[in-house]
Amino acid sequence: MAVYYGLDIGGTKIELAAFNEKLEKLYSERVPTPQTNYEDWLYTVETLVRNADEKFGEKGFVGLGLPGFVNRETGVGEITNIRVADGKTILKDLSERLGREVRGENDANCFALSEAWDENNKQYSTVLGLIIGTGFGGGLVFDGKIHSGHIGMAGEVGHMQLNYHALKLLGWDHAPIYDCGCGNRACLDTYLSGRGFELLFQSLEKETVKAKEIIERFYAKEPKVVAFVEKFIELMAISIGNLITILDPDMIVFGGGLSNFDYIYEALPKALPPHLMRTAKVPVIKKAIHGDSGGTRGAAALFLK
Image 1 (cartoon, rainbow, N blue to C red):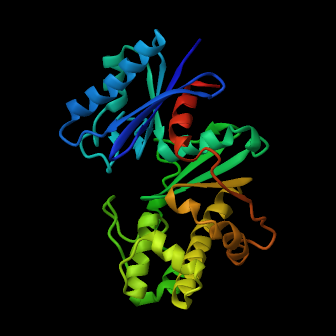
Image 2 (cartoon, rainbow, N blue to C red):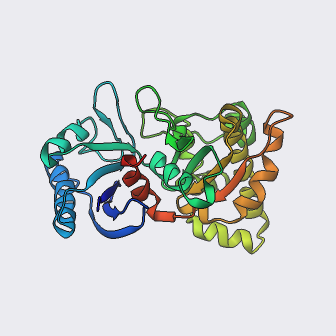
């Protein structure tokens, strides 16, 4: 029996999950992400894979879901959230250590692939996966295959920047402008994420609170919090409306911590039409079926046709 390993490479943890050809989970192991040096990081990934090999008595296929991408032309990873592996030839180095091919994709692409391949979603040929968690990431799946782009950067929607309508909504010259880890400013990653939700509330309402409390106060119908959430939904509609205009997807699927805010699925479809062309259709908008396991599941699927 062939075994497929999907590794979700995060800034704080690395998880390996093993799957069969039907993408049914067989085993998993999670460890902290080394912060010391690149050699420790490679050794940690290698050890996870060797442990799984020993359990199954064979060499599994190895796919990585990365918070960034590996440049197809140079083989160098652009993974700003994991400093020890950023700028390194991670796929080449791991392939040499493990004695087999190692494939890697942006974790949002892996997430989108996992959702697109679910039996409930196979009728949707164009799938846009959006992760609204620590950051704002995007993944593209066309006809069951990830679209990575020319160098592997496709889907990095978090590094699009605020546009005219977004700046107008946030108060023009008074709009909060945040620095992004990529080196630019006003990237959507710092607005349309769980972290951005909290940052915006702090900037606009002058309170420092966690997303969970903001959502609780919204459901308690606190007027200023209700107004803030409606503004946030409008900001989502402005930005995601641009993605719909470009991609015309059949389905948008949300993952990440903020995707559990169920009001999004009620409000966003109503907020989108003013930001689309007249004859455009709002796509199906869903919460992820596979939740936190989507990254490992999609990474394992990199070796499946």
